[in-house]
Amino acid sequence: MSRPLLALLLLAALLPAAEIAPAPAASEVERYVALFNQDLYALKGPKGAVLTPMAGAFDAPASDIARDVAQATWFSLLVFLPFLILPQILLVWIIWKYRKKQDGRTPATFTGNHRLEFVWTAIPVVALVIVSIPIWDLLVKMEAPPADQRRDMVVEVRGKTFAWDYKYQRLGGDAPTRREDQFEVGQDVVGVQEPLVLVKDRRVILNLTSNDVNHAWWIPAFGVKKDTFKGRYTNTWFTPERLGLFKGQCAELCGQGHGIMLISALVVDEPDFAVWTQLQRNRGDSVRVWSALSGPEVDAKALDEAVAAYLKKGSDPWRTFALRYWVASNAASVARKPGDLPAALPARRATLESVINRLGAAPSAAAN
Ligand SMILES: [Cu+2]
Image (cartoon, rainbow, N blue to C red):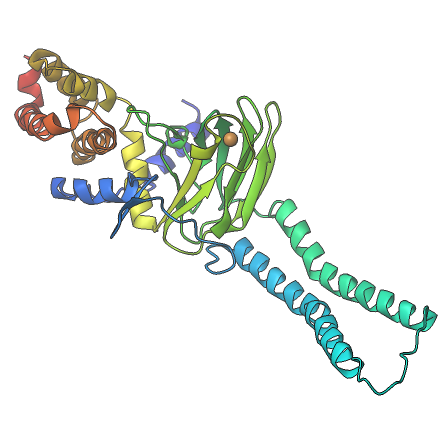
């Protein structure tokens, strides 16, 4: 073995492994399902289910770009407001002052006043120039990608009739993104749209495209609205600054399902995002377990085999936590759809729990 290679291997052995936080307790499953798999279509209000309102960019900006947009809007409103109000005041005053007074005098008539016409043209032109300066700056800022992107999250956004797919190309932050961190989220195994999950104060760059017709990705609270086209990429960026679920809507009339082509972004803090990435890493193999659990009847043998296969790839606390999470998350998605399955699922999750405990406690025994 060559000496530089040996030195490199030695260095790799000495470097601390990427730190992974301990897995949450099984009792935390419901908390994370409630956070990551929120009902994107409805909010249970006092009057029953109502559509979750979209927060606006002006009353509640939730990103750096949205703050700039709100500021620019208020500024132009301030500059233009006198043009709306002053003529109305003048009009009322003139009508009152020169009303017919029944004193026998006839009103004077006159047309044209070049000086006045010049003034009332020049003043609006100056106002437009004043407003255009900060707006131009902002437009350039929105269009130009940030110069230093090393810490940025990068996500490919793909519109399709009538849902969204998100491909995480880079998670951003301090740690370099590994190949296994290039997650794809979209619709879960039950077909429920998943939100775009972002980290508070971590800038995100979106590369947007479409599978079919034109769509537009729009979340007002982030101050971002961008068209998506098939065969071509558009880009946008922003830094989410508030925690929470932010609602949007496809903003390009794209077909029958356009009205329900909702958009949601969930902004979480670093620790919750770390949990979310661990869940994504351990997601794929959980589908087989879900299939064994979600049929008309539970096939005990198939379930045993699916759980054993899942645990064979790793039975550490993160693996078992992720398995419990994905089954619970799919159950939450199913519960939003009509059918008999939701009522049966609590009992089936208890069955899964006993299988995990039986196989997870002694994975070597399961192999025998
Ligand atoms: Cu659309």
